[in-house]
Amino acid sequence: MKSLRHAVAIAVPALLALGAAAGAVVFTVARRVVTPTVRRNDTHILAVDTGAQTIELDRTPDTELPGRYGLFTSGTYGYVKLGAVLGADSRTVRRKLLTQIEPGAQVDRDAAFSGWYYVTPSELHLPWESVLIGSPAGPCPAWFFPAADTGNADTWVIQVHGRGTTRSECLRAVPVFHALGLPNLVVSYRNDGEAPRSRGGSYALGASEWRDVDAAVGYALRHGARRVVLMGWSMGGAIALQTAVSSGNRDRIAGLVLDSPVVDWRTVLRFQAREEGLREPLPALAMGVLENTFTARLSGAENAIRFDRLDMVARASELHAPILILHSDDDGFVPADASHALAAARPDLVTMPAFAVARHTKIWNYDQTRWTAAITDWMSERGLGARAGS
Image (cartoon, rainbow, N blue to C red; front, side, top):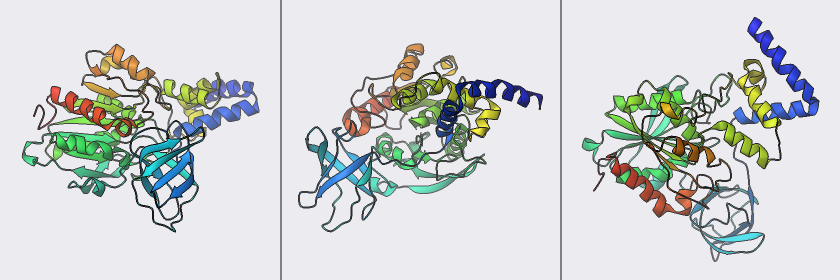
């Protein structure tokens, strides 16, 4: 009780000193950090030509990217696939539709641009099954893609999706690992909308979610794996890194592949705050709120979040498995600074090929050939595949 009073004595006066409005902003920012997000519309469908099978969107740094993408919509279609950019002006971009839209279909104006591309595992035309992984949070659903040659598949890949997304985000990488002869386990974790909800239903930014991924590591080891490779996307990268330093099976983790990863949350949250026009000390105070047990709970977190423990640049010496980082230098959401810092801190472990233009978690979409080669070559050079070197 004394410690709680001490926490209140320190935290509350600091917030009150800001004034009511600024204090409210700090708590709003803190709550947003730990609250599971829903997909936000970020563009508008301006026109659909069903004859030419083209679509016109607001021009944004994402919608103008070359490559193949997806678009969440409402109306007749919940999701459509997009191909090449056919034309653009200062305000709009016209792209080829890869999903056939029939005349008379209702397509609502608001939409969300996505790098997922694939939504369901059946789209990959590979064998797969749904499995449940018993974790401390409860049974977490996963998709299992067996290797073509199950007799020579003792290395499994476990994929971890990012914040505000689901397992579908990971489907782009399944064919790459399948071609290497590796089973794929694409997992969910607490509070992601598919796995069980924790008591408070909030994110811990990897500090708790890693236990669900660790349960997946145990599942793989019980079902024939001798070693695992973790692949994490965005916040899934933070979760994979926490698993790599915290798991009781960390000696079985043979490598990490990280796409647009969160390596240090402070760097990410400061960047995102600046993008929204918030200046110091507000971002620092919001993180301070989340580090204090009492104020963290007022913000919706279940427990205090220790950002030092989530800073993998500071904890670089604890890493032992080789790491491949795929991160666009103009990510636009999770800056690549901490990824570069980790590569500089552990050049013996980290491989980080240069990527640009591709934005956040969209390197596969923008340059599938080079993205695939980066993973395939890195895995093969380390003997992490039944067909490595073939």
